[in-house]
Length: 177
Image (cartoon, rainbow, N blue to C red; front, side, top):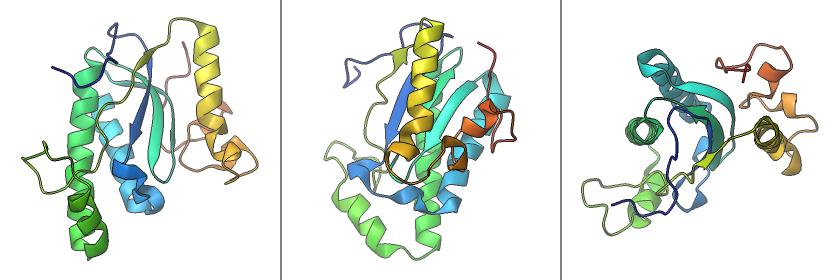
């Protein structure tokens, strides 16, 4: 039984989702970790109809708008794959302190792993109208601006804001909705 009351309501409709690093640790300050996220999404896009409409990756969480034939399963696959990749990267790069924190902060019921990268859940919110889609995209793209990291959304490298301005982004997004 899911631990959250949030559920994907309609496949393959777009949903706004959030994924947070355990205890908000800043793991995405390393480009290698961000590339693991992007590569996972690319795989899902090629593998089974995962559609990415928008995203932003910040230092300790990410937001995305996505749809797929089974979005819950795809988010589970995404989190499992990226967790393994990030842990392997941290082990290879000698990041013992970060790994100690991830082990210490792991939830007690997580018995099949030594570390916990992601917080549980992703709080999917169904996007039913164009107005809601625009509002969620604006929220995603303005996130780094509101945090004071950049002056314009397109200046944040790890965002789909560039895609929506007709510029080349880091990953393909669906702009026709």
